[in-house]
Length: 77
Image (tube, rainbow, N blue to C red; front, side, top):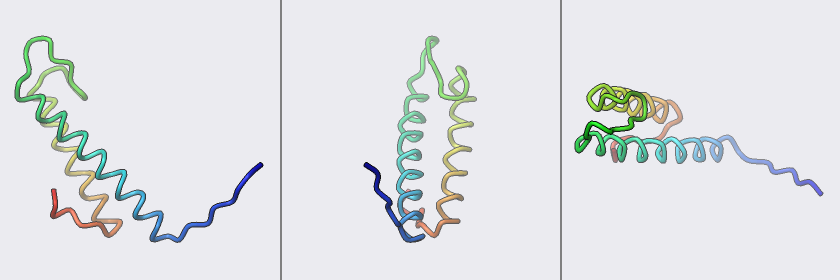
């Protein structure tokens, strides 16, 4: 059995924006963990907490730019 689902472009945009916001939330939680890092810190992008925090911030900013492209509002971040 198969189904065909037709979605409007606006619906696709809303789904993309929602997923991007979920990624931002996740990265922000990871960013918080860099504040209390110890010598056993296992980072997202780098095992050095400062470098990792810098990379996380860069990725958050990039995701916000993508959200703006799709017409989402990033003022809530």
